[in-house]
Length: 304
Image (cartoon, rainbow, N blue to C red):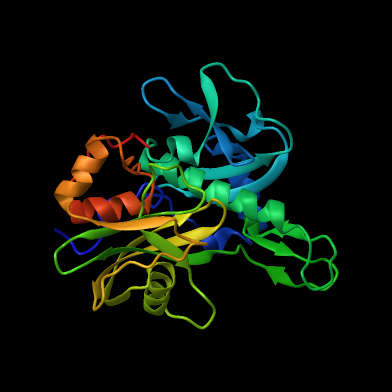
């Protein structure tokens, strides 16, 4: 098996993002005027999705899309440009289409559509929460085809923020996996540990610190396996394996972890089949890390 993760639901974008074209206003306007261009409408993280014959994004011609902030998403191998428009009001009602967000359809869409929706949701959230200049407090303006905000008063540029977070599958020398439950989670939900990277910290240091803080374990052999964007709202999840050593007694931090336990493969399968644990869906990188350890798809895995 490869040393990297094979499939990640939100890391399947297929477009050339044409970053070099974003400040070329003439090129962007020509692309927008091209009747071949396809546009994704987005509103508070949701898009219109055709549900017949499997979910697919409803993509329209520029002339059929209402006004709103416009983001250039990229160009495909045939030279077709793709944009997203953050519509000012509710998404229009279109026969055969439903409103849906990433949690519902992110793992079910084809590669192109998954990449379009992930990119659009991330940009929409960033623009909605960063409309003012952090230097002077004045309103900023969209620039670079939706990938920069510029302050007209002082000329400063702000770029979309991404928060790196490590997510780690911890196992011991007996090949048991550590699963835990957060304070806000349902009683049957379990997952692997995760946390945000702190300033001045490497990813490997963040893995070791988070495991120590959350369950009191020391880890070694920290190994990177893959990453995927998590625009809910603005994280990049970086997946690792790590091996616990020394004292393996779990000491959950009560403000972060309600309970934690070790599972063999047989114990995990039995707990899922008995309904004691709900298997994570394939949308999350956590599920992909667990499946790589488990050796295949988990029992009773939900479709998303």
